Length: 163
Image 1 (cartoon, one colour):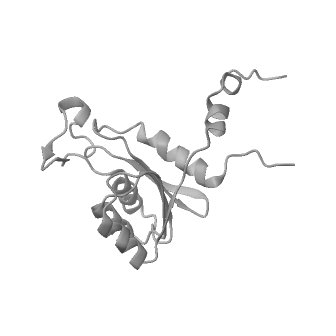
Image 2 (image 1 turned 120 degrees about the vertical axis):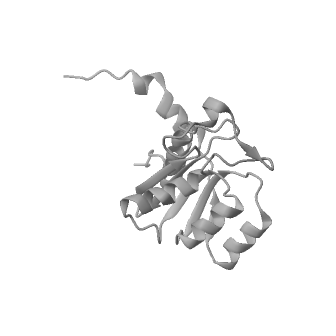
Image 3 (image 1 turned 90 degrees about the vertical axis):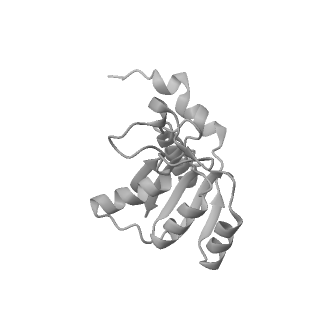
């Protein structure tokens, strides 16, 4: 029998994409999922400090072309680990967009061993060099549309319980 389930890398990336829909930044919606042993240990999306105003409410707070109000998704995921006492060392991250230089450095310091990403986004050359030097594997993941169609099909949502 052929396994028709979504592959793990696409499953976790789909989770990151879903989480990105919670983003409160108007410029780019990013989601990140930290995974260890095929289990999600934390997640984050880009947005303001909890309880503060959001970019959606008052617009982005731009300094030198960057929104300084926003905490990046990768950082929010790692901070969630810190807040709840979950070790991030040895985990993998699935993120919708290639991490910026600051997030790359933070992920390295947090002990992330592999980075999966969906889209390239201003990939910083120094970040790419650091990842190679530190031997952190980086892999682009695409989500096969057949799984998205399976998830969002009318048949999937309109199943009737059979008794």
